Length: 92
Image (cartoon, rainbow, N blue to C red; front, side, top):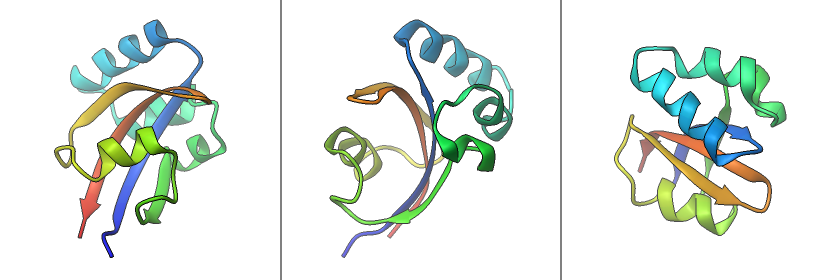
């Protein structure tokens, strides 16, 4: 069974998501941006979602986490919860 670890930032708008992605790509720390901006409780841990397998997160997450490039910021990814930036930290 495949496993992945990832972290994310959840915000309410695509524009906000794009602005935060630009900050991270310009050198800001993902975890700091998550702590300051994410509306998900995981934001307090820098957006860390821990380890999970396929089907444990919403479909839109799975599509990115189990196929996207590692250690790169992906998004905005729209789900029923809002807009996410995702960073896949490992996959096996």
